[in-house]
Image (cartoon, rainbow, N blue to C red; front, side, top):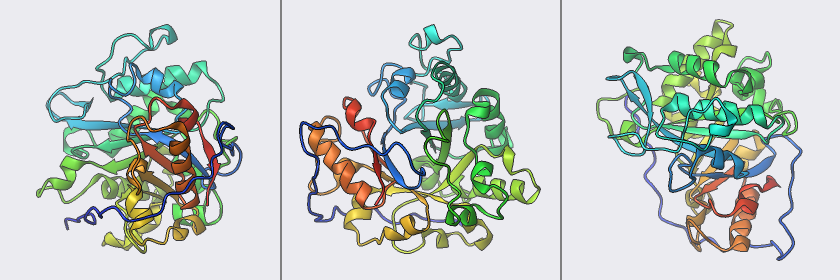
Length: 342
């Protein structure tokens, strides 16, 4: 049956936090489990206004890069664009490293190809989370479903992907693997890309769509695992929307719940909305806090002072985030931060 996300919460009156001392650089925690550290990401990193090329986004030092994808069954492609019509982005689809900054407006294959080409020129690069918002969801009937998504990732990123099977490690569910401390250390994740999938804005507003990206991919992942083929799954489905308690209870199929170990929602709701984020920390779940600038007191969403942006990252790391995102594309020293979580 259709599911609805919790309504956006008003900004809380959380107090400002700041222990970053200028001019000393922020402390980094480059070792430790990916679930025990906090990195910084960029919202809609595929947009030309964010970075001239996707290679520039990859070179920024950010720990998470987000792209928006549409399943266009009319042309059989995965379009990368913010709006419903058109395809405008900074992905070149370059197989030659010297051409990573030439062209643009490619589809998802082009973006993934850029990542692979960049990856091959930088062995041992930092772990990168690729967050994909499926704007209108999967379209399996049109050949653009979870299985086809996996095939595309295999054909482009291949062994560069950190997969659910890597976390699973022979355990029965992702939840059990996370609870057992199965997440890899950051040094073991050098040169890897972890893909997070969230349902898109259009999909969530479509009254005729009762199978959103999160649930559809979780079913796919569970079914592969039960068939002994978990290694074919390329991505981690995320529970979208901040709410108190265990937000996986929204899924009527209780058998799906243990296949969600990534959670994603507004930072201001987590920090100012009365949510106990220690639950995420204690269970070793990945927690992406978006819109970091909007936590009270708000700071500039694009170009805050370096110290206040670093202080906000430290605040949200203390609140249990594993990734903090905003649009701070001009602050590479902040984008490259890695702090202890909690």
